[in-house]
Length: 340
Image (cartoon, rainbow, N blue to C red; front, side):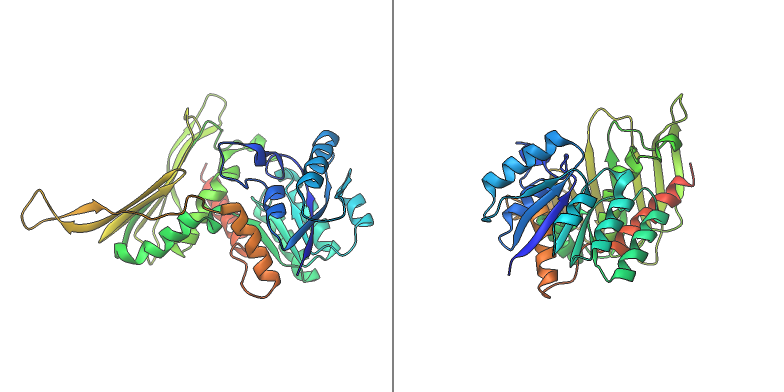
């Protein structure tokens, strides 16, 4: 069965990251939708005419459908002129997520795919959830690591490392961690990148982060938060640490999970797996020994998300990244932010 799809927002994540030669492709909603043979990408809307025209030219050249894709200056115009859409993907800037997602829901497609983070805050996200419930429209959120084969492999290895003792998740970049004046557009790392970090930790551990103790808060001369460390303890895991830096001269996304029998480290370009083996250095002792990990060359993080959408519409699978989980992520971030 073919499903018709439309894209709202033809910027980086919506379209142009699909041309980044260093990234695993597909790396944008456009390319991932086009790559799926069960989907016909038939329309897009954006206020940027240059982006729109480039998008239309590319889609019409690379699409497997017979009719040319249409473009519109606004989502309102698209919804008035395009009927019976099955999937609407919302990939606009964070400050427009709530308004555009609600419009998409009220169109009543079979599914809305929403780019992360859900909204600027959990209150806006709850309004999206209320609208979705009222209209009976499911919403999935593009927390891409949930669909990546390397992270899924790590999840399947968790039982081999015994009881989890500690988890350390770290994100380092040059983008400010938080500043109150940036709440209006979401241009701070705690929201923009921290959403990914918190989401994949909760997904891998199948646990919820609540009531943090936040230490190591560093603010620059403009009172902008540049560093923090948040500590958690749950019934399942005694110590979970979330660390973020916004003054690093590099980008790193890394999670280390220490068990009683081994250790797993996973992140951007990082895949390490260790198990307890008899030590080669000391009689009667055991050491952590690196294990070979067989991982696919491509993680399929974006294509996996789109395939999950198709499987959901065909009744073969639940949504791997549902709206309710993404709202919990925002609530975790807000608890941290309250400590600043």
